[in-house]
Length: 88
Image: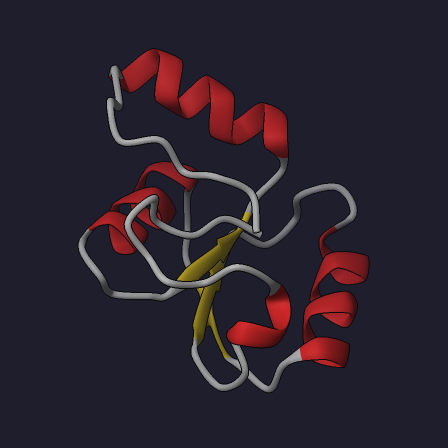
């Protein structure tokens, strides 16, 4: 789970009823969604690709995103994203 660098979130329990974005069909996504829903009661938003997902986070369309670490790093590298998206 990733949040913006300047957010106040420190753990999943801080994200109790916020909006989570994700891209379907990523490996392990079902398990990740289960884990999130154990710790929080978020509104889940399905997004069609990783670029839109990260844009939604950076533009405050969602509070957190569920994304594999390698995909987040690849997106940052390919897009020169200076704003890091730390793991929550």
